[in-house]
View 1 (cartoon, rainbow, N blue to C red):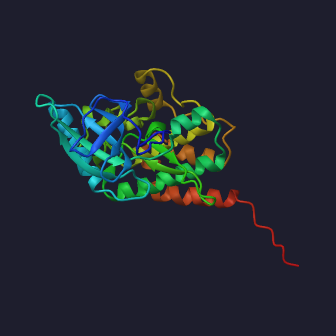
View 2 (cartoon, rainbow, N blue to C red):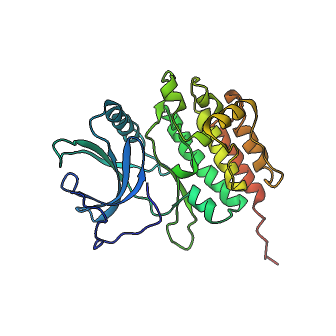
View 3 (cartoon, rainbow, N blue to C red):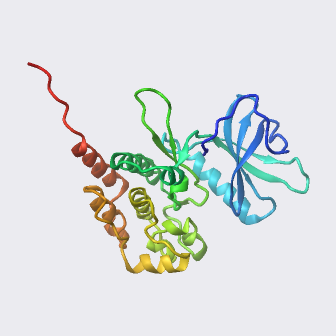
Length: 296
């Protein structure tokens, strides 16, 4: 998890917050959710930036979410997934005991912010899709469904070397579930409303295809710079149940056809993450101009 800011060892915290576990100093509030706050922080032992997710105290549902997220993140080890490094309990206030996660801090920008700031090339969008699909292939192979693929949960980071390009990293497994979990009204509809799959909006059994649909909407938004299903949550949910997202003629092939397959209403007709990787790889190869032969 991360943002566009860079910290230094001498930086002073913006918050009057105590050290967590006598080690982690919260510096800046990055995001606020119903169950937790996310901070940019500092590991005072290793002298590096971290992301700290501090859960609300006392509520059983928040504790359950904390345990679930720890369980999922601890089981994952992939370069495309933001990793967990520590967990703990903040006991600085006896009446406000709160669990927290410590994760790697990704210096960069979210897809949401990047799309708002500039137009992405078709190749950039395909590469983002490829890297998220790589992460999803691994996550799905571990029996996990992310359930909240959105532009805000994909980080783009540049390692700053001459030969490197921007890399996509998948964040926020706070509502991820095991693929064999039985769906219920609360579990199925959690997620960012604009990117929910049709089956999520109607409380149906979820499969890895749910993540593929959401990634398709993210890729489409990268091309159009607008949401495929605008409006309030209920209206957009009903619309995606009855219609496939419109793909404008400005989206080039093969990406228009691929996004169309990813966002089919019937989950069984969507490609798997493995199939998606093959299709994106083939599209990238086809769009790469041949290298000229300078030999006499």
